[in-house]
Image 1 (cartoon, helix red, strand yellow):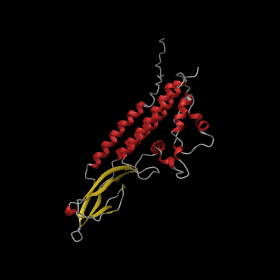
Image 2 (spheres, one colour):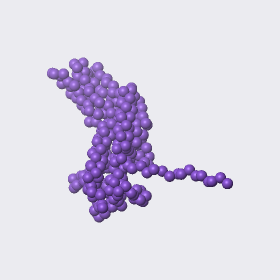
Image 3 (cartoon, helix red, strand yellow):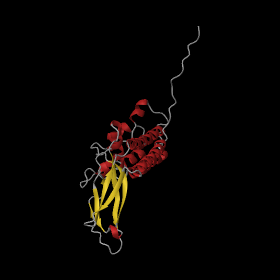
Image 4 (cartoon, helix red, strand yellow):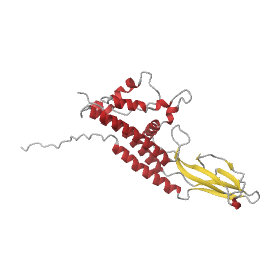
Length: 278
């Protein structure tokens, strides 16, 4: 009778790298998002046309929008914020793993996460987050508390936490988990009128910046025949969540990345110098 042989289905546990792999992946996604947005903006789908009324001499600049930003851009943005959120969680996992001497239970691994709170907990941060931070050294927990969005709330801005970078990353990642970030919009960035010396353009602006629609009038002015010209930047923005007035999508993602990089660096730095329990 032949012996029974069975292939092992075990696996080798891979220790997190302090979130660095996820940050690297986020950088790749940001580069891809920038390329997608630029290719769309460089096409003739989103343009600004100027026409001059011969009777009044007034020039009107109007949006011509023949399509929406590509769906692929929303997918890449969702992947970016997910990797940034995961980098924070992995930094916490790595801190706990090191502080526990390289041994965590499965239950501890499942609950470890970087808490992000929009409202200060009445019971205190330590009690509220104890279940998410087993074995995380006190120096790291202090860093996590210091960067909480709820510190931006005050009497003047009771919802200030909604503008905090960590909350925006967390909120957008939460939205993307349940449904794709679909609301991408054509947008007007910086704009103005170049005026030669001695010319009075009588400029009338109809929008400061932000998302635009097809046919929307942006500005009217006089003096086109004398060298007055309309100067503008076109962008793609994410119109999602509860924050109005988003910057261009690549600038938004760059800002998210830089802040999360800083937080992850602080967590890893404190973790490296924290004494381990004997």
